[in-house]
Image (cartoon, rainbow, N blue to C red):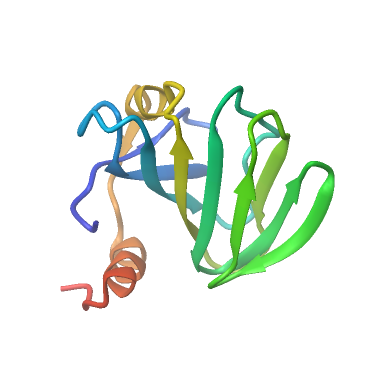
Length: 138
C-alpha cells in the first residue's frame, strides 16, 4: 500500500486518499482507500445514494457522526454507513487519523478521487501503511 497513488480531491480539503483498489484501476465495482485526515481534518457532511461505506480505523483517533449520532473512534474501531445516511468523520488527535475506507458500489467515487491533486506520501504515511501490512517502513 505504501506505493499506491494518493490524491487530495481539492486543494483546501483536510483529507486525502491512498488508492488501494477501485473501479477505475481494477474495474471491481467498489473503492478501497486509506483515507488520511490531517490534524483537525474532517469530511464534509455527506451521504451516498446506493453505497454502503465502511470505515476501519488503522491509526489515530477522532469522532464520527452517523445519522446524527456522534461516537468517538480509535484504532481498531469500525463504522458502517448505510445508503442515504448523512455522516462525518473528523480527526481529534495530535497526529493524522488513518481509516481503511470501503465503498460499495463505487458510485463514481474513485473517478472523483483520481481527478484530484496527487499527494506524495511522507515518512509518517509510509510508517502507518507499513504497520497495516505488518512490515517496516523501509
